[in-house]
Length: 121
Image 1 (cartoon, helix red, strand yellow):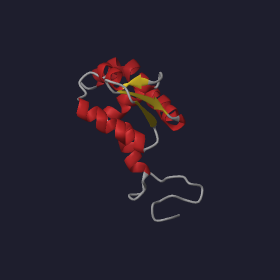
Image 2 (tube, rainbow, N blue to C red; image 1 turned 90 degrees about the horizontal axis):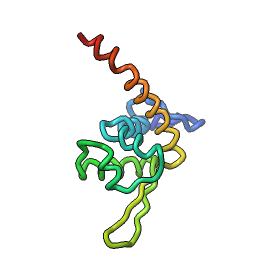
Image 3 (cartoon, one colour; image 1 turned 60 degrees about the vertical axis):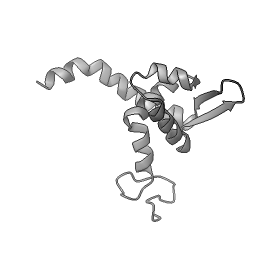
């Protein structure tokens, strides 16, 4: 086990305070990270398409979220030298795997929302 909490099998330990998996988990499960991953689960989208689909996200927060997810290897950003600028975002293999897991969680939440809300009273 090294100082980052990664063992010889290259597996993280999210409960370890120094494990880099915590930062990646934070990016994936942030308020906007989950929604970006859900939007991109169905294929490549342009920046403006992502922004239109996620109600309430600012341009700044979308830009920041996309940069974090790109740095984490969850998506690929492809820019085209056109006027106006055109940029596509596509999930990587890791991104597709994570996106599917997040989609399953969101789907479970949406399907059980009535019962969950009822239990809050």
